[in-house]
Amino acid sequence: MSVHRVMGIETEYGISVPGLPNMNPMASSSQIVNAYARQAAQGARARAHWDYDLESPLRDARGFDMSRADADPSQLTDEDTGMANVILTNGARLYVDHAHPEYSSPEVTNPRDAVLWDRAGVVIMARAMELAAAVPQAEPIVLYKNNTDNKGASYGCHENYLMQRATPFADIVRHLTPFFITRQVFTGAGRLGVGQDGRRSAYQISQRADFFEVEVGLETTLKRPIINTRDEPHADPERFRRLHVIVGDANLSDTATYLKMGTTAIVLSMVEAGFLRGRDWSASRSVAEMHAVSHDTTLGHRIALADGRSLTAVQVQQEILDAARDFCGRDGASALDPQTEHVLDEWQRVLDGLASDPATLSRELDWLAKLALMEGYMRRDALPWDAPRLQLIDLQYSDVRPQRGLAARLEDRGLLTRMFTDDEVAAAVLSPPEDTRAYFRGECMRRYPASVAAASWDSLVFDVPGYESLLRVPTLEPTRGTRAHVGALLDSSPDVATLIQRLGADAPR
Amino acid sequence: MPQRESAEHRHVDRETAEDEVTVASVDSAPTELDADVDSILDEIDSVLEENAEDFVKSFVQKGGQ
Image 1: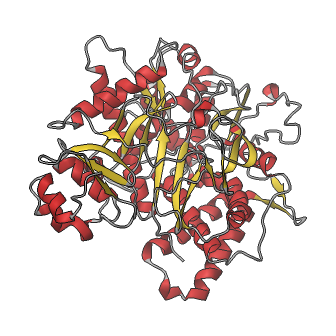
Image 2 (image 1 turned 30 degrees about the horizontal axis):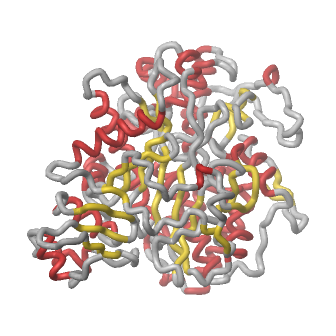
Image 3 (image 1 turned 45 degrees about the vertical axis):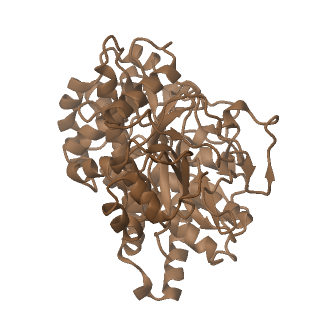
């Protein structure tokens, strides 16, 4: 059992032009992406475009394809609408998705790296804001790493986990549903507003909870399901599944992101091994419980389980963690790698804190940090819950600018813990992880910017001097194309023609 | 954890009758956490956007995934 598996995070950012609420968000989002792309693309040809050929957003993991005619237009994510779209030298994808700028992190193999390359995305978005503002006559654009405008709209922070295809999808549904409902107690980013349109001025744990309406489904923009069945592995579909998780909040706290990815990876490990076959924490009414857990900041709400028991979210999480300890006890304690051991310990520490005194975790969990700020203002200025200044704190907590974002200010003061230094994050802005195909993708973008015509998660298309056609190099294996596999090859290929010769990929597309 | 009551603002929607937001109110002496937060409020005052009400009102998003 391990936290190690191929994973990644894609984040849709809130976008606003202060004072101009009617600005077209697709245009603003394109300005953001294009400003960064221009700066990143020194020496590149007309920018490499995203290769949509192998995208299958309407494939459902339950074994059928939704017809295009039945799909809501927002589900047709495989069409190149000409929106800004760029691949970065760190292997990430920066693009416009449904009226928001989105950063899809490169593939990583562990939760720590997931945090690092997710943070790199925040730096990239803040830099893109600066660059867009430098364009003459540009209206200043502000970006937020959050999930709702508190007026009815929501947008996501999606986690992706590579899984063994052989795992029955029904097992994933049965065990991940109660896990997602209850993990909110440490993954929630906090929201002042209850109900999709936020009409009730009360604080809840999660930004996203109220937008979930069904248990299982293919949609991501309406009738949002706790378990999303999108089946687009970007890898060999016989061997792999990519679990696409849309329930999470966008986190600013490194610890929250780390635990979110690490604990989920552990649960997936157990599900894949069939270890949870005899267990069932299913709620009688999952969607209602998802909302109820989020709405109770005292953490006292008892979930009605289908087996007749009533447990709090923290208690359910503790039982899942206990199962994880049993599972590794069975494997042998010496079989645990350090990061897995660390995630288990941190998970226990956080659950203990939530069970005894949640305030002790306000330097580590976003919903508690944000709440502490609001309570500080309420104390000092005698504000009621519906004071606009508190709404502003909710929003500005996730402003991506280090000088203006409240989470960033807390970090600067040591009031929100960090896992990485500024230098480490700066390196991740430019360089890819070394242990996935993101390495090959990012390094090709860096070394041969003029020669990459198109790229996607599972391929690169090169324009090579001397070849009539473009050449596609598939990168179907997420764990190949690493520095160990291709580092020396890249280092000894001063130009793309040499690289292609050495790869033996000289058949025209 | 000390929280202010919001009794005057709690109207329960029919759809969510079963999940009332519960906010415990405890008037206690300021904690170490409170002191931490109070120290940063001045700094946050200086970076908060002006005119909270207008700013928040003008933050309108299209739905995403």
